[in-house]
Image (cartoon, rainbow, N blue to C red; front, side, top):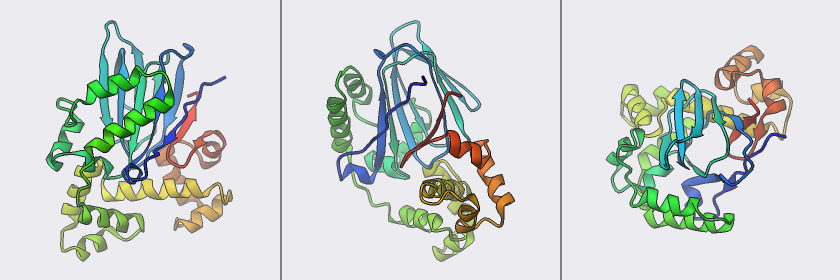
Length: 270
């Protein structure tokens, strides 16, 4: 039977504004491989693994045993396609999902965000040390408390009014040109701004948001024609085209096989 990963919603009410949730993998679990597909979301994802060799090949992430002990930190916020994730076996890992713009509230300076694309400099104090301590804990409740306490200690609660209002309008489905005109900025500047802080263009962000919202509503109405109409697709063919672009799957197969949670979308065994 395919081993499934439990996703934990953030518990602290203050932290929940910025962090969607997280999951843990333990290297002490059975040694069966873990394979799943992660579908696009407008999240910023931070992951820390122990004793691994991580390789990236287009839309495939492979996690293999390392020849020497190590701790590897990666950050992802530019994925717009499904990504296959394949573990040769379970390893100690923490993966955290931050809400759009959420990670910015934990940075001393917004300019430090660019470092998260390279991992040459991690702009969070004692990040690897603290994550390593959590990875060595045995009980999940202790891990959750330590993880949330660490991020709460870094919270800056920055004023991101303009960025947040832009995302709000994009999520409402307003035209990108109208959003830019309303703020007296060019469409090109809006594109640059969103790409810098979300890893996605305004149109990509809007498509992914609409997709996630539509998938969430599938639990209420499983009629695909209704979903297409409610989310302003021209017709069923237009809906299928956009759906396949984000999932590499037809809607029927996706809803049959995917694990749909409130926050993340996975498909196991691929």
